[in-house]
Amino acid sequence: MSSKKAQINLVISLLVALIAVIFVVMNTSPVAINFGFFKVKLPLIIVLVVMVIIGILLGWFLGQDKQFNKKKRQ
Image (cartoon, rainbow, N blue to C red; front, top):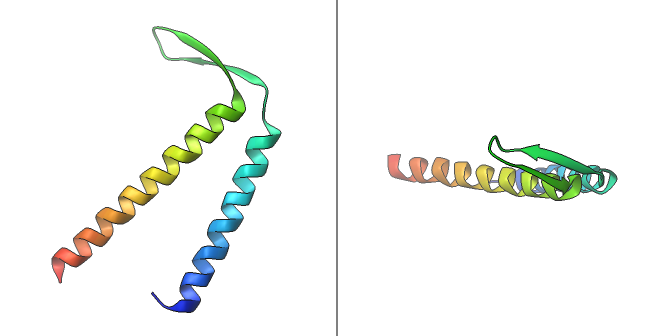
């Protein structure tokens, strides 16, 4: 990856992270989450943070799989 492309990716990632943090901090009211058999009431900030973490992990795992397949083909 070129240095310029890495810098662009870093800037975009930081902007997305900043937007996510602002969005999470602005949404702190409690929400009810229905799992079918039981219901949980949590602050929305916790739900959003967990969803952001899950999204980051999924993106990372999919990126690792893509890199693994690319190396395997070489």
